[in-house]
Image 1 (cartoon, one colour):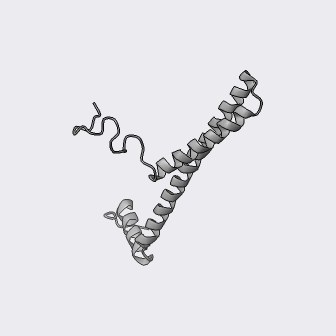
Image 2 (cartoon, one colour):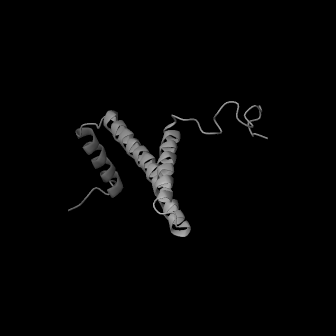
Image 3 (cartoon, helix red, strand yellow):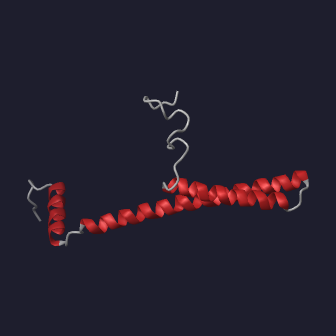
Length: 119
């Protein structure tokens, strides 16, 4: 019934945690690294797909508005949907780093300055 007064609950809990940690097999860093890479890949896929879908949706919406107010039939929707598709593909390529943005192109306006502010 009598417990040792010098051992506090925190000290016993700490010792128990160390015992459990020593008896458990160590989780390799490779598993954690793969899980982190998987999460990064999933996040990149979500970003790219949302940019692609946004381009298509905006193109379709603008085409619908053009058809509704100008009375052009399905032609505004068709043309702007195709332009939205192209814009979505371009956004995906820019996000993936395949196509340089306008700021990254050499010889563009403001890139010949050494201070980098474009002015």
